[in-house]
Length: 231
Image (spheres, rainbow, N blue to C red):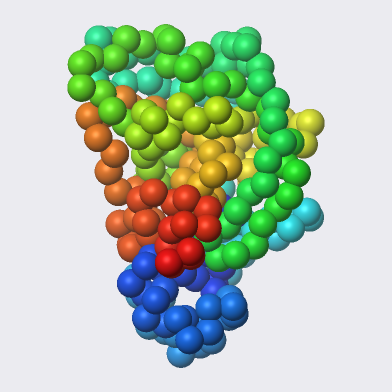
């Protein structure tokens, strides 16, 4: 889990639990111990050493109790699924692709945001140019090194103008806590869609429920229009 995932005592567990527990007080993010006891059996327990709270307003969590690391000499981003033949991109090849930069706001589904995050990285199209899709591909599955974290986007969603794979944040190489070596960035969606510690991208016929969506979050996590917001 990462900054995209709700903090202890203030989680939204998808539309049904969200509406059932906080409809009468949606402005408050603190549910209290009584509500937490109702949902804690659904969510993987967090280690005592988590959350990590770096500067700048980020809140970082993990579903596994630890943060994946990577070795730039051996890391590869595997590209597979419904393709003519699989391929992979190593870290140095990733950095050699055309670089893009953008500034956007990061939104967590629990209600906190970090403004003016400067990302540097590559567009998905440049990464996916290394493979040829078979007919019928309409989605991308993003696989994290934090097992069993996955999530997916439709090809239309993945093609939005500011969707990227980021390897830099605020002018520095992406830190381990923020998903090094590379993470997905999709500003229009809440952070749980912004998969960190990427190790693979699979081309698939249709999107499927990711880790948090299997626990009740909305698959299409549009900021302000999903998970009970804007309803």
